[in-house]
Image (tube, rainbow, N blue to C red):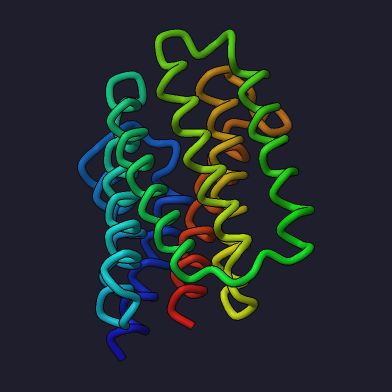
Length: 210
């Protein structure tokens, strides 16, 4: 029952944040709901035997959510640092659970690297003083997605989740640094960033608990 309740808390907070709070100004409620969505997954991972690594990675990402729920101009470096640490833990976790590198890895991993390089090239002139931090972050998420491609077949939800996480970050990056919106819509952009991210985290959690 505990796992179902935590899944429910995470899902309800994700929907509440995504459909009601995502475009509202920073507030305590907005930060709390956003943080609880992934924070509940962290508690779930710990209680359901996912090991400390999964729980810590999710907790660090929840901390990043808390920072990014505030003013991005003020808290973005702290949010990047929290997510960078979270990706680092995911890399270690996925590497420990890896299987042999099959054909899918050698096809998909270079595409992930190419996508990340293209993203950096498009954003480069807009990154300013954050260039070193963003490069480090992109390297971390490439490592995270690439190691997820090595997971055994049973862990496929985690691989899908890692790819969704990267897609969310790509959309968010263009929004933050270029002001680019999906189909010119701020609402559609906010929905895509949040729901791709949350579904990604939920899929990673599910995949690693299977």
